[in-house]
Length: 162
Image (cartoon, rainbow, N blue to C red; front, side, top):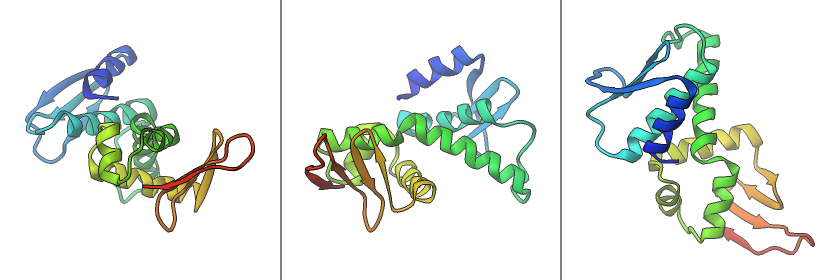
């Protein structure tokens, strides 16, 4: 999902997105207003920030700036996970496999996310699912490296690492 698509989604949810001269953060949400730092250079970076802020809009309640609070950290994680799922998800990993992506850089390019956003998403998926997860006839392995195995109907797949 690109920045323009996310702007449309935010609007459909009732959120108003504006680019502002933020100093301490790339994105901020207050009520139904989302601010994105206007100094962010690429649409890809802005999309990753906006996806997380939309995640906050959908999942967060109250002021969670104090990350020393366990409840606030959980809400932050929930919003980030929502962003990872919106921008990548297990379907996106499979799509990259089917597209022929051979590296994390190729995957980030194909998914239109930043390298760091992809790496953080994969780390989160590894924490959430463990070493591997089965999804729609594929096995996605997160350790020792990312790989996808198509199981198909008979379980005789072809394995590719990314």
